[in-house]
Amino acid sequence: MPLTMRVLKLDDIHQMFLAFTDAYKDYPFGVNMDEPKFIHRFVHRIGIDFDFSVGVFLKDTLLAFCYTVIGNHKGIKTAYNCAIGVRNAYRGQQLPQAMYTFLLPKLRKANILRCTLEVLKTNAIAIHSYRKIGFTEKSELHTLHRAAPNLSPMKCNSPYTITKVIRPRWDTYAPFGPHPLTFMDCNEQTEKNLHYYGTLELHVFGHCIGYILYQRATARIHRLGIDPKYRRQGYATVLLREVGTLLEGKALTVAHIDENADDLMAFFKKTGFVPYVNYIAMEMDV
Image 1: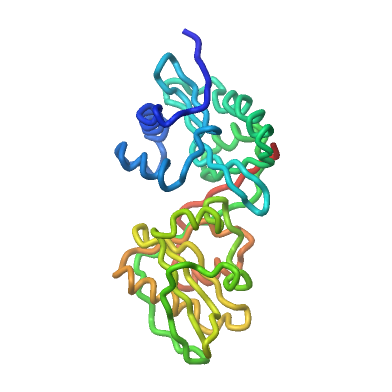
Image 2: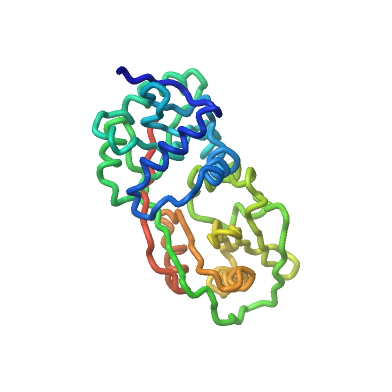
C-alpha cells in the first residue's frame, strides 16, 4: 500500500503522539510523557504550526513526522524543526528527506528564509541525514548540570538589591549578554510562555546591572547577564544563589551555551556546573 504525505491537522494529534512515542523510545534521555502532556508541550507551549508540519501516513497511521514552529530568529523569518522522527519499523527509507522535499516549496511560498534545528552531538545518523537534506553545522551547544545548587555568600564591591519582575525588560538587558540564543530561547518565543519563567533583576545604586531568567518547574537557567562594567565582582553568583534559594535546593541546569561563549562557560564551571550533554545547531537556507 502506498504511503501518503500531507500537512498535519489538530485532528491528527493522537497519531502524532503515538508516532512521537515510538520514534523517540530509544532516545538516550527517554521521553516520558502521556498524551495530555504531549499536547500541552507541542500544541500549547511550543506552539507547532500545523500548516508547516508534515506527516507520512500508511492509511490512517502516522509513520514519520516533522513538527515545525514559525517565527523570527536573528531578524530572519525561520522554520524551526522542534521534532522530527520515523517509527522504528520504517527507518532507512529516507522519509526525513522526503518530508523536507515536500515542505520546502511551502516555506518558500510563505517567504520563510531559513530552517534550523538542534541535534544531539552523539547522534551521528541523524546529523548525516540532516546533511543530506541540506543542513550544515553552525555551532556546538553545551548543557551543564549542577546537583548541589547552594552557593556560598558573596561579598560584592557595591551594595545591591534583587527585585522580582513580572515582565523582562529586553532592551535593558541587551547590553548585558547573554550567549547567542537558539530559536526557542529568543525573546519572541520566550514571550509566549512567560508564565513558566521567573525573572530577577540586580540593582546597584538604583540601576539594573544584571538579570537572571529561569524556569521554575524544570530549574533551568534560561539566561544570565551582567553589565560588562560589573563583571567578575560576584554579582552573577549572587543571582545564581538567589535562584537556588527560590527553587528550594533543586538541581540546576543551564542549556544551549554557545561554544564561543567562553566567559559564560568558565563562570558556570567555576560555580560547580559540570558538562551534561552537547547539541549541534544546524541551519539551512530555504
